[in-house]
Amino acid sequence: MNLVMPIRRHAQREPDRIAISDGERHLTYAQLMQRIMRIAHALRKSCPEQAKIAIRSGNRIEFAEVFLGAIYAGYVPVLLDPKWNPSETNDVIEQSRPSLMFCERGFDETTAEEQSRIQRLTFSDERPGSYDRWLASYEPETTEAFSERTHATLFIGFTSGTTGIPKGYMRSHDSWLRSFEATSAAFHLEQMEHVLAPGPFVHSLSLFALMQSLYGGATFHILQAFLPSEVVELCAMKRNMTLFVVPTMIDSLLELSDPARASIHALISSGGTWSPSSKQRCRQAFAGAKLYEYYGSSEASYISYMDANP
Image (cartoon, rainbow, N blue to C red; front, top):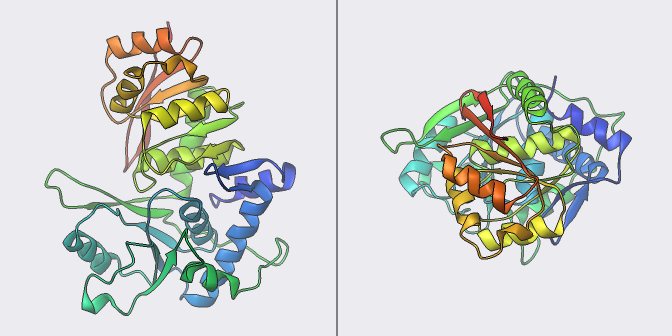
């Protein structure tokens, strides 16, 4: 099954529910599905079948909709970390050979002459970028007229590896859908309303949390970077937040003068060892929050978990 199909069902059943928000702009499930279909249609008109589509961007709504539009149309997103140096970026582009690249303004420069053949579409905040103009040039297709195509590979991501050189990995639709089911059952996420994962989308943990949120029909809140005060403020505004973080982020939250302002339904930690003392401080600071710790990897996602509640 294509990963987008649960989102499509939410769009049909709860079209006006907010799917994703960055604080200034939001998309309902119906609007998100319309954008996904339009992007998928535009990609089919622009690229050969089953091509790779590179995304080099920070956290933003366009990242999510392009990622989903590509996989809905049967393409394979390749996630490029904006923090890579030009040599690392060039090596990955040369290996993956994408047909099209979506970039945030500032990351759209051509870093190697031989890669100038790759069309780049730019996300922009100040004025419409080439991405907006490209998408506007294609008419949206209706749900009835559009059929999804599912590539065996969901996406290609990269980890730094022990040498610091990006190491590629591939995930499948089925592996993530099964992981969503397991995580939902283990962490009791069936009734989640609001979700936040303030790490970069190019990293598996935050991208997985984003997709878990959309799979479950919740509202995902985007932060462009992890700032402890902004996380607490958002969790105070949106009650019963489900928070996906790494242990160092948790410790930064606990160092604030008023972390108890945050209304957290579940605090889910991964990406490192969560110390017993930090867990105890969380129980005191975030009274009533459910605490969970899980082990996984970019290559395998969810592997095992621990219920850290007393």
